Length: 169
Figure 1 (tube, rainbow, N blue to C red):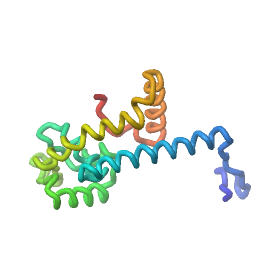
Figure 2: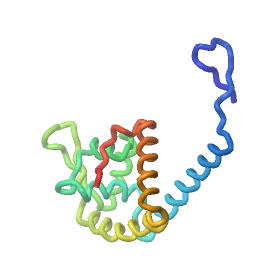
Figure 3: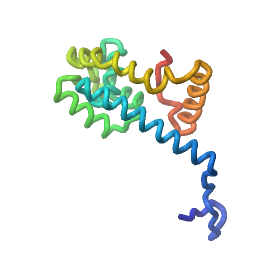
């Protein structure tokens, strides 16, 4: 597939294909990402919740009153309005969260974690952490963790995720 470069009216240029080293790195990254995701999804399945459920429940479990504004939760997760809305509807049907009107802003909606949502998070979290350690953290030295952190932050920033709030702890 050919791509036209801006400012070269009618002239086509070849894309900058990955060289062998870059291609190996890219494919290794994709394999690593998929392997970690599969391990985490499998572990959560054993706990009775989905990965998206857990992604919503963790920040709620850490929030004051286990409550966040839906808009802030969506921003924190990097999800669009449709995705967060559908996910919250499914979770509300299963009794993991409730939605309430925002008292500060009539247009806003708050999402609150239920006791059942908290209980399932508390049950799933230890095995989730053990899986993260088994498939990533414990395989790396402290220097490698620092390097991977720096690379991940730089890539996330380049992809536009530098504005997403994310706790440091």
